[in-house]
Amino acid sequence: MKARFRSLARMAYAAVGLALTASIAFPGLAQEALASQQIGTRSIQISNSLVSGTNVDYLVTFSTSSASSGDESLVIDFCQDSPIIGATCTTTHGVTFTSAAITNSNLPAGFAFDTTSGSTIKIKGTTTPLAASTSYHFTITGVNNPTGTASTSGQAGSFYARIYTYGDNTYGSGVGTAYSSPTAVGTDDDYGGFALSTTSQVQVTATVQETLTFCVSGSTISGTCSGLTAPDVTIGTGSPPVLDTAGESAPAYTQLTTNALSGATVTMKAANACTNGGMTVAPPDVSGGCGSIAGNGAGGSTILGTAKWGLCVAPGAGVTAATTYADTSGNSCPSTFNSAADYGMDGTNVTSTYGDSIYSTSGAVNAISSTLNFAAKAANTTPAGVYQANETLIATGTF
Image (spheres, rainbow, N blue to C red):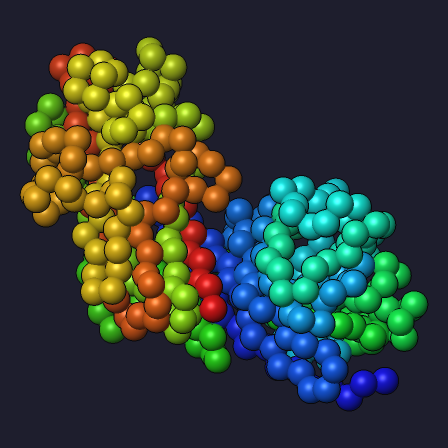
């Protein structure tokens, strides 16, 4: 048996939305002695980070080391309590699988889902092995997020993943010792770790070797994600606030801290069913619930006159706003919805699986605040009603 020592640091990030919820996923770090080698750049991005979320997609990305030439199988363990490879792996409150399957894969021909057991998933090939020093990705569908720990069941918290590759398609039995459990991983070629976190309504933070702390507030954020208020945004003027044809805006505040050398990206995902990313009204308006105030950049300026809805990002130092949400008019995210260049809303991307990128960093940042300015504008013919938009923010770090 090879002697080895591995350590995995974790990181977590959180996000919130306008009844804003949050999501996070990013890679961990591992070390090992002797023959096995550490997997290169890696991450796990999840489509829904809520505690006890069901039928979630986990997008796994990793780069093989020079030891992976000929590898024909791999194992991923999900553990609730420990990042140490070979250590105790509690799965009682951890990841489970509804109907696991592998999709969106660039693994070699013949690689496919094999089996799941508890919080373990196995994948193996039949003809073509993994190539050395190569980037691969695949999506695990039908995953259920952890429900919490024994003392915090139903609450947010960190959890971990461990990956190992093997030089045969029987998980190490043909080249040495077979994988049998998270505490007996067998004769692997490559290994690596990931740290992830489920989130509750406002924020989740973790500060360890790798860090990513992300929070959203309805008021200006002081310190490091402190002094937060509920991120509920109301747009309009007067008392009570009413949206008019001039258009108004209202802010939400975000803060990001990470030591990710390759930076982090924040995406926004619309919870509403509108394909144009627009606002809905309850009870449904006469246009079907999505047409009266559509997302700007998705036909909003042509639906019912000039009614539209969008976002303008005022980025902090080291943060770059995505083109759709950057102020290109020189108005510095004005309080009124003056032109299409002020505010944007990509209806196609914000309704996609992982949402639309709204801003990013190129490297590590420390407690950098950025403001999300949401704006809407009614037309003279916009039906009366209380319009709403529910957005989820997803932060992903890459090391």
